[in-house]
Length: 289
Length: 319
Image (tube, rainbow over all chains, first blue to last red):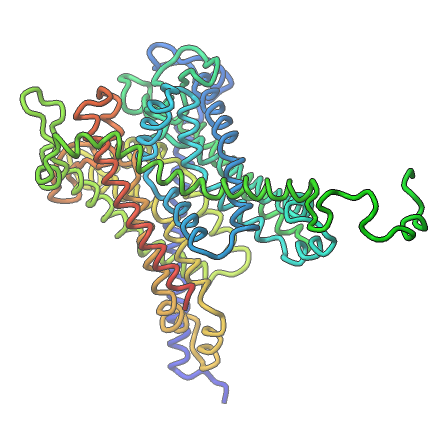
């Protein structure tokens, strides 16, 4: 009575085949990452050393290290975070805790989606028009970082909003019933419960910001600067642009040098992402509700 | 401890003691802080709108003079001659650039569709527990690789590979940029498509399974039709991603102005043109403004793509 008919068996075979087919498709997306990583490690690994990270580029960028570019990228990321995190967190608090379901909220959400979807080179044009020329910051760390901040704002907003919304509504209601104001509730109950999720989002933003090239090309990153920036109104080198420059613009670069730069860049980005993911997984395991 | 004992308070009629001025409607310090914070976070919320309008206003104001003056609309959209640096007569025909962007994006999305939809179906319908998590994390890491690193991979790994495999003189072409862009667009398409599949209510699946359908039959006959619109949005967002990609296309497409006959021809993209030329133009010159005009075109097209994807997704939520 419960014996599988030929049709059942056929269907079962199709199911297994399809499952395998889709697994292969997923693997085809993933295998390139592993291949690329191994190639970068094999070809760039020998170039990366402590001296590589702490020395200036020499001989017209065909030798030496990447120290100014590394410092420049760190400076750009820090200034961008200072600008975007407060605005992004405020926006997320508004959207999660205050915003009524009306046309304005829909418009804000649409703006966030579009901000994330606008091509990076258009953000660069905006940075040139707004920060470099209109606000007269010149090509500087400040102009480049603000451009990056506008571009990565959606990352902070979306991550923060998600972690705020993950806090159960009952927590808020309990607090309101004690007579707390909306802000007291957010400050004492909602934010402490969401802070780790917000941090995860910020780490993700660091990774995005560090890897971007197009938005900083014309707003503050220089091809080559043999010294470190002294303030936010100076130009700076940056790892991502440095990779582009030595890979395409400078002749006679020994092949392992750009691979080394690419390895350092992707190492920073993937390390940040992995921290963010590990943090997320850990938090999910710890969640009490 | 200085406060009066309760008996004293009880003696006074209510409201007569030393109380805040507006005690009745609760307007104390906390009330004002609360209102102030509400105002501040509102400004933060609206900032996204301000920035998106700011982007449009600033790129338009930089390119405005050109659009109203030196720009020849017919030439801009229909002529393939982009010669902004010509001494005798500079021409600004963006047709070849538009075709370049379209061909690379088209190939990228075509290659990415089967793999990202396949991955999404596997993750959402077939994978279980830990494997699902690992796959999702790998896809997320794929999305994290910076565009300039992708471009570098196209330049140093794909280029010789294509030259050798297909025996063509140059490996920086539509095929190279298309594959690279496909890999870049795939994670976002996978994520959105998986969301769309996950949004299909479980009782749809249960109903089909109760009738004896296998998991594949459930997926094919029930889940996919129900998630059709979300999958469409995923493809649209993939197109948007490919369309706006800059560094990878600049480095992998060959960057030569060309209407391609096949996948082995080099092309030049709208985004890459801006990235390559903006540094060499004088602020305010025709060339500079023409590049901003390309930016306006990119902004408008990606805006339309994102808007339609959003409308499609909103349509799903309503039903």
